[in-house]
Length: 437
Image 1 (tube, rainbow, N blue to C red):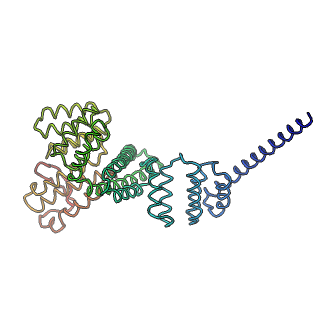
Image 2 (image 1 turned 120 degrees about the horizontal axis):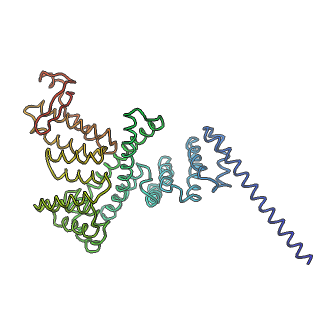
Image 3 (image 1 turned 180 degrees about the horizontal axis):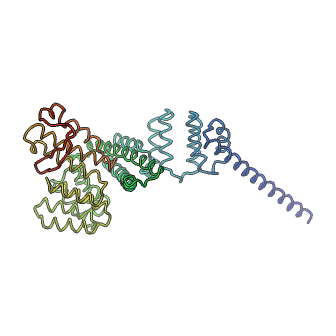
């Protein structure tokens, strides 16, 4: 009996000792964490380092903030060894907390400090991509796709196409989100009701949207070299049977064939019909309308477009359908449809760019002399500038640069007997008043 009591007492003492030690360790972790956080938030990075190292070694699972502040400490101290430890310990202890961003940031750090090979960095980016491409850093989205394209453009182009589609869907989602936020804040700004914090947010959203727009342009340029009609048609013809009931595959195939202007091939009609039959979606009916129009059945095409438009409830998607319809029209009719798209999404930069391109194409036919023709470029430039203002991610920069090169020179304006800053009406079907540059 005495032995049992002795064992019980020993066990009790051991339990108390172990839990006491745990409590003491937990208390020490909290003390170190509070000290570290205080130093980090006041930018006393040298003082923060010892507490950070203690937390990484002894309290790694205490808080995600250890790593958020820790990355800043290591980067400001320019300590690559510490930074690497911060990132790797975070990924080990908080694998589900913003994993895409964490991997993307880690890849940036390794690349900037030349601490890993290109292949090692790619593997980290691949983990981030699988966790959620839209949460990766802007340049890393492009870097990841660029590597995939280089690796597989000859051996497995379908993998390149699939990666492009995944990435572009993420980019489009982010751009649409920024567009909505920018629109709300621009309205507040115009009314003078915007707060200083919202003003900062507007600036950040505008910058980020612009950067994403450049990524979108870079991705398009990269895929354009790979996704030619000569390459797409054999691949989609080969894979159609096994994917003819897969709505996602059909949507991507139809979209790519449409964007690459491969619509003249009979395969496009086959894909569009299958897409409509499988998904019965507004998007599918919209593509089918294009097929009907191409086959000369204009009344059925109009009915199908209306069906698609009425079925869709998202105004942003309605705007896209109107713009797609505009792209199949010409002249004033195309412009009218683009303006209809803008009624559903006033911040749709691509609609303004489309109108700008219509004007630019009419430059030679909408003027009797060089000055009048070049003033058409002024009208186009105005639309491109508007696109950039309302939708920084639409890729307006290259259009603006191109149109600026073609506006009338000071000499030409003088020879015409006009003055800069004066009003001028661009004739022809355009019929818009603009300022002489």
